[in-house]
Length: 473
Image (cartoon, rainbow, N blue to C red):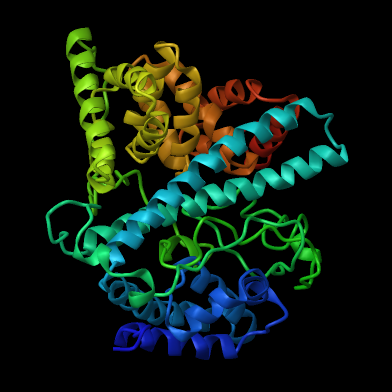
């Protein structure tokens, strides 16, 4: 057998990718970015030794739209997705494929945690800078990219989990446990995974024709500013001389992104469905989450048992089962989770608490609000705020429905916290769309949420509400 034998389906996709790349400009657009950042990694994908994440393919298709037109690309997207999915599945079934996916999942979760922390740091820095200064503009620009990183990484983690779930169970029945496949030397089964370098200040970036939003629209979708073309994508004219902070992340290869969310900018975002690893393809609307009073003894007993089991799994290297346990813990009654947080921190498992928050953030909005409220009420306001920020990458109408429901249940503080988090993460125009469902009830709440931020943010939201017709001149 050859050292780097390429599965048939992966070879088919590699040939398709080569044909696609041959139509593109090597000195412009996203293709130029990928070649500049990691020429060897890009070549490995073209040769079939690695499968690029779906967002990379989607970006190349956006480049193709400049050459062939958007209508052509929208038809081509389905074929590309089918070939890519088959290629990734074949690639994952190779010896060591499961272990590689688990490793990459861990790395991407760290990217998510890093992006969240950097986001909050930048918000604090922006608030301390005078409005309109060069520093404030640079910080705001970086904040947009950090949020783009967050959105991309969230989608990649979800896709990576789906790929893991599609694989047959491990030989010894232990997810992530060492087995025969793991003992195959890396060089005998696959080349070392391709990695992107950390984001740099120099290098080309695509012009205004490209767009690679994450699982939800980026902060400037629908505005003149284009994240893919700098602060004023409309004036960029497709040039690639400006500084570019994309792409980034722990891994370049082997991680797909949701096709609906990436390849075509205007495709709709998914509904308010459970999206964590536990939920698979759940397709029904969730029941409303009501706060549950915790029995202190039961909550503490469950927390300590979870921590003991988690510590044992980590010590035995059973990371897959440890992650599954965290997914289960994220579904405990909302008021039990602050107790679990305290026990995890006491045991030195802060990273596992961060992972649990990510899982909780993928749950329905009403449960999200209940957990955040429980954390804040237990003195963990920072955790509650982080959870909300991670969980509000959803359509405005779903947030509006949740806010109205929370108000009707007498949970006004949770409703306000949800709106504040949404307003901080989204553009004023996107935030103003929340009012569309019930302007009379939601406009006052949006204004209250805006007042919790900076004066400039409040002014921008007021302007957006006026433009949308929800406020008088």
